[in-house]
Length: 195
Length: 91
Image 1 (cartoon, rainbow over the protein chains, first blue to last red):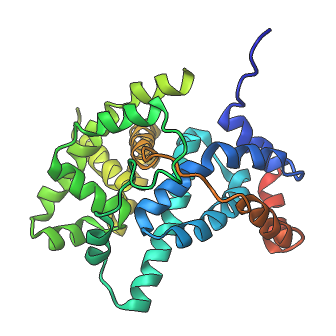
Image 2 (image 1 turned 45 degrees about the vertical axis):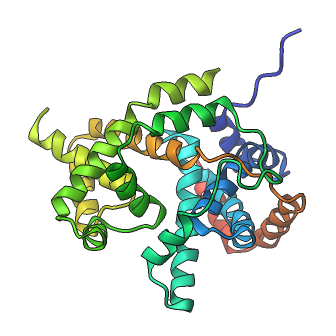
């Protein structure tokens, strides 16, 4: 007997946009919620806040489903873009409330353990996650730090240059080099998706 | 690689990494309008950074979260966002 094939994520988003019953949304949530929660935890460092924002992220994904355009990026890229955006909003709101600067948050979050620090809440790490992490080891420390500051803290290249006391051109070069390195992982990603 | 393509690659990298300034974004949009084939560079970078963002060990979600999401969506149905969503659904 043939095994049931998982729904294609693009089809799932289309179904979510067209269907009001909630079944596609449930499948979509099952597929991505654990990954989104992990990203929110990485960015926010607070489980309670991450869980609250997780709800907002999925409501927004449901709301935006009719506008999703697969020619502009994969479903996972769309999902993490929305999640990142909501997390950055929360960080900015927190910064306004407490007067903390972004670098302070960055330093705090460097202490977050995502690889076994909270075994009670981890679901099984797949070969896909392990392969990705191994691939990311190819990034140099310089490349990782500029990508952390830009992607996870929402800093512009100018802000990063100021923070790290580097010329703007150096920051841009490191971001480009890091992104090129990440791009070399695409074959790994695609293989994982079809496996 | 042409100068234009190199410039587009840099701007696409900054865009995907979330480090682009408003001026960078404007310049990138103009380059993409002039040469839609450059979209592939942007898409590849976005998929790459998405892989980075989704590489953390997944965390188990609380059992009640999905029900709470459904409640929020139910509140929105019939409201402004529902009408907006229906509008975007039209072919």
